[in-house]
Image (cartoon, rainbow, N blue to C red; front, side, top):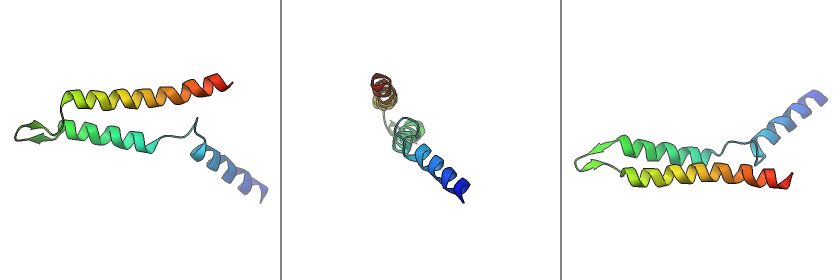
Length: 74
C-alpha cells in the first residue's frame, strides 16, 4: 500500500511541480501558431512569419524564465 502512495506522490509531483512539469498551454499555442503558419489561404499563410516569430520568442522566454527563477531560488 505504501508503494502505491509513494508512486502517486511521485506522479503528482511530476505533474504539478512548476520546475519539472511540461507547460501544455505553451506547447499548444506554439503548435497552433506553427499550424497557422503552414496552412495556406488565398492571401498566403493564415498568420505571418513575424507573428509566428513573436509566438516562438514568447515560448522560449517563458521556458527560460521558469528555469532562471528556479536557479535564483537555490
